[in-house]
Image: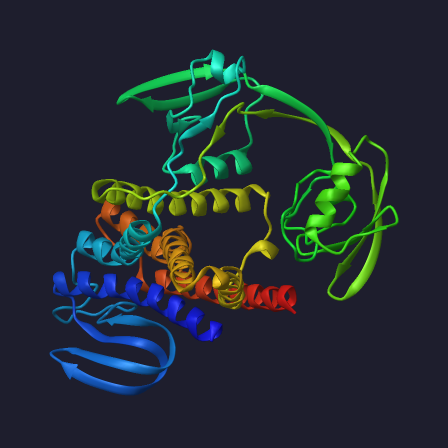
Length: 429
C-alpha cells in the first residue's frame, strides 16, 4: 500500500511539473506533440488538434513533448521558432508550477492542522536575549538576516548553521511594530563525539549524521550505523543511548563503541573533543496552531518558502562538503519515507496520516522545483542557461553542441540515480 502511495505522490509532483511546461507552451502557441501521464507503452490515447493525450503503462510522472524541442525545426509552432523569452517562460514554467503546487497543498495542510509561528515562548530573566529587549510573545521575523516563516525554519537555521559566537541579530514583531536587536549569545563548552541521532526514539540507536572534522568521522562512523554498545554497556534503542550519555557525561576520556553496518559488527575507539557553541538564550514555538483565513494564506506562502529555503541550504551544504552523495535519496528512499510516515502517524488517525503525506508532497514538489533550476545540463536550469546566453548574444549556441552537452548531462544524471537507488536499497535492507 505504501508503495502505491509513494508512486502516486511522485507521479503527482512530476505530472504537475510537466503540466507547467504544457500550459505555457500552449499559451505561447508552441505545438505540443504529446502530453502524457506515465511512461512506457501507451494504454489509452486520443488526439486533439496537434497534441496526442496519452495514458502510459508505468505511472511515474509524465512528459510534455514539443515540436523541435531537441532539434532544429523550421515548422510554424516549433519550440525553436518561438522567441527566446517565450522559450525561457516555457522552460521555467515546470519549476514554477512545482512551487505553485507546494503553495496549494500548504493551504490544505495549514487549514486543517495550522502552522507554527516562530513566537518566543520563554526568555530567562537576566539572559543576554532578555537584556537586549526580547520578550515572551514576540514573533521572530528574521534570524541573522534570513527571513523566518515558521518555528521549524528558525530551528533548521540553528541546526544547520549554528549560533554565532560573537553576535546574534534578531528581528521581531511586537504589538504590530518591528524591532531589531543584536546581542552576544550565551556560550556553552562541552565535549562532543560528533554524531547525531534521534534521542526520543524507541527504535535502534541509528546515527542520522556525522559532523565533519569531529572524532566520530575520524573513527569511521557513518550515517546509518547503529550503535549497539558503549564501553561495555549494551545499547538497544536511541532512548537508551540518550540515557547513557545523561549518566556518563563526556569528559574527554576515550570511548569504545560497538556498532552495526550492513549486518556486520564493528568496534572503534574515539576521544571526544572540547567544543564551544552558543545558545540563543530563549525558547520558541514549534507547535502548530489554527490560523485565520488570511493568516492561512500568509503561512502557506511561508511554508512553501521554508521548504525551498531548506532545499537550497541542503544543496549548498552538499557542495560545501557537509553532506556527501551517500546522503542523497531517490524514489526508493521516498517509498521508505512514506512507509515510516504512515507507521509513525497511524495511531493518530486518518486525518494526521493524510496531512503528513501531503507534507511530503510539499517537500518533494519544492525539492523538484529547486533541483530542476540548478544550472546543470539536461535540467531545466541548464536549458535556461543556454537560453539566457542566447538572449545576451542574440543568437543561439549551435543546437548540436547544446544537444551533446544535455545528452552527456542526462547520462551522468542516470548514473547518479542508479547510485542513489543502490544506496537507498543498502540503507533499507
